[in-house]
Length: 225
Ligand SMILES: *Cc1c(COP(=O)(O)O)cnc(C)c1O
Image (cartoon, rainbow, N blue to C red):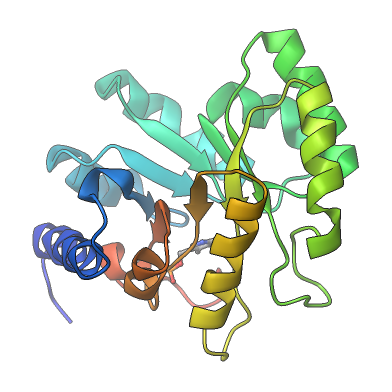
């Protein structure tokens, strides 16, 4: 597979546009996050050169190593944190990221609240939901959503929506549909869902943020999923 990065970006954008049209949604409501975990700066630069500005990383340390240099060349980059976050990394995460997608428990909420206050930088967060109720997956239980949202209000953390990673090897549509219902029930307008294999379905079912890696950059080295 030797598709050029330019073609891959255009293809993904076209697919999003088509899915949005099918669902009669406004294309401006859908944000493509290029998941650049494990990718080097050259690969990232090729997307930046095409005008893409929204990226996602899943390791704080890796982001600290890669992004300051890229940001010195492009001042309008939007960096999303999509990995599981340890509370002891909250300060660094608040400093380098613009959006956090993986807030999923009270202890992390407290750590983020403290660091946001300290930095006077209240960055938007998604509440991650363990939509398939899987044993060792990140995300809060469905029945904890309301409690976490209320705690976030008290802690001054802006929660803009819900995020999920549905179970592997299962049909995703019912999970995405349930996410849309949960967001609506809680009066949240943003939905972070959909990856390379299912972003079009996610758009059809209401995703506002799709997180796409492989379809934009090619396959990742095996072990770093
Ligand atoms: C790696 C990752 C993605 C992107 O996965 P692809 O299948 O490469 O598109 C999306 N979301 C999260 C949370 C990830 O860790």
